Image (tube, rainbow, N blue to C red; front, side, top):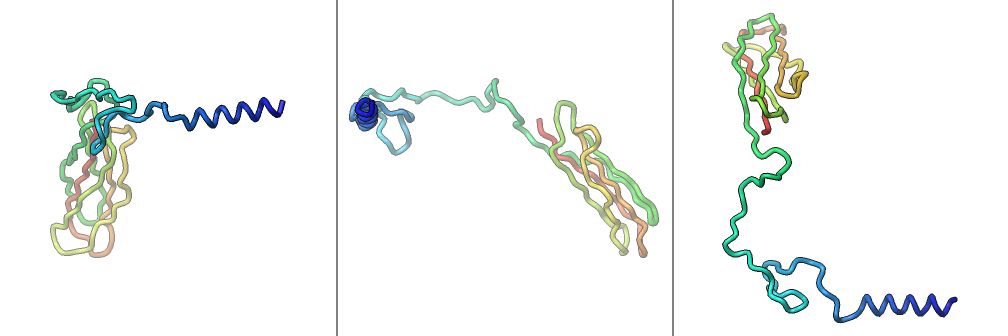
Length: 145
């Protein structure tokens, strides 16, 4: 039994080291000969133009930033600003912009997150701190389609 196992192991090792094996990788790589291990010429890819977006491609191919309407935020008030993605796209992230109308303290952003449905962005801002002045807020969202 041990002789059979030794003979089988030796056969496997010799087969793995044989000189007549065929390549298992691509037939051609840049900087490498265009002949395969068996000596045949690799197929030519000249004249073939790849499509920009294959019809069987899965996933998103375009991301755009959409800016919502500016919302006025008076001193000593709070407000929300939202923005939605166009139909057929999904929100992948978002944020906000604020601007003061006069010199004063900066409004506090309480939340900046996706809307309850995954197609928009919501910000909630509080402007009730000492020295608050009127401000403008705006939400933006990144939409993938």
